[in-house]
Length: 329
Picture 1: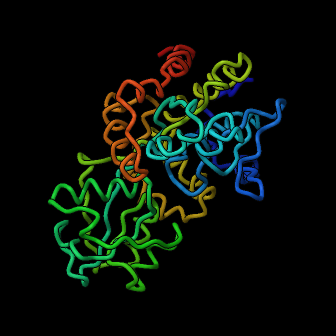
Picture 2: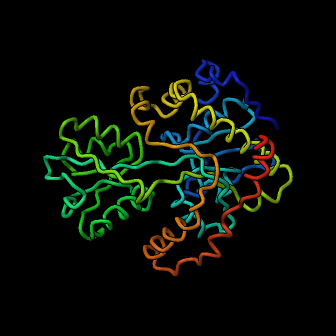
């Protein structure tokens, strides 16, 4: 299977591209919540978050593939359950699903999310330390939650010093406007939506040297050991690497497509764009990040954390190397 990518990537936002990607479907969850495994003859299937800008290189790679892959809404949970051959999520989610399938493997980081905390000045929040005693909306056990925890630590605060508020992931900005929460720790574009909704009442708190999301691509040892699926996976990763060049170098051509796919305005996506990087590689500090996050996740699950060596075994570098060779890098 080939995923040809040419200079015509500049024409991504065509009607045919939008129609082909708009056909993405939700992962086939069974009534009891389990993932329905793929049939042996299923097309190469990638489960992605259909609401985030981080997915941009996958959208581009899929469009360039002319229908050679199938995109479904989902993530690493579908990979772990056999409902997708590959999938994306933040690094935190891989550590959470590993308990259900220890054969999940990380391949590369598709995007880095540069998170922000958006707060209401009228709630008395001007600095990070002012979050003490405040209500903060964030999705629990996610990268956004971990971002909040790490930021609080820098000023000597813990989760016990704030009240976590939960709401729908596209309703967080509205929760702040309705004064049901005082601040938000969330990925884009919901952070941008909160900023725009608050206007002059917004305080922005950001320090990406403390934390940045590593939105990565995953597969399983089973896919890696299947000659046919491995070839498809390597070719797909190659297409993601090349697509990432377009995403980085020609965002004005990609933004209309991304806005359409995640159901946001082009203006919102444009304003959120600078809070992302698209490395299409494995960051040098990935193992350090996983080691720290595993300690946090293990504590919340009341279990012993995996050792650094066991975490290292969850990272597969071979597919990325093969794909990079195909691109001549």
